[in-house]
Length: 94
Image 1 (cartoon, rainbow, N blue to C red):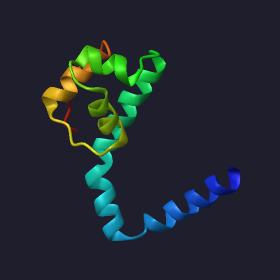
Image 2: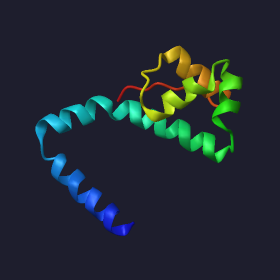
Image 3: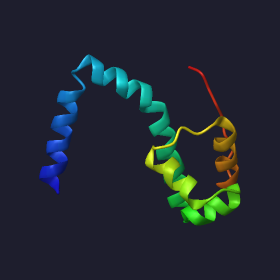
Image 4: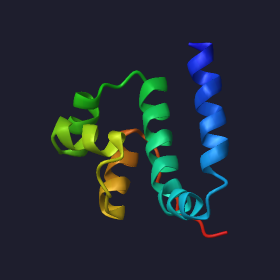
């Protein structure tokens, strides 16, 4: 595992030298940061995707697509997910 981890880090460092890769990474960073936070909170609270889906009023497959990064959610949907996690969605421009 360590070999793969070190190798992936080296590959990522090399890829992030490419301006086009950086451009695409920057475009997707916010989405993946949001997804990572949702997954982190859900795991910490010990809530399954099915339980979160029930609280949100959606299907488990929608939560799965969201967490996989294969879905570009609306702010309304993110707000529902936040409430389902017992959190408040806060949007901030820096």
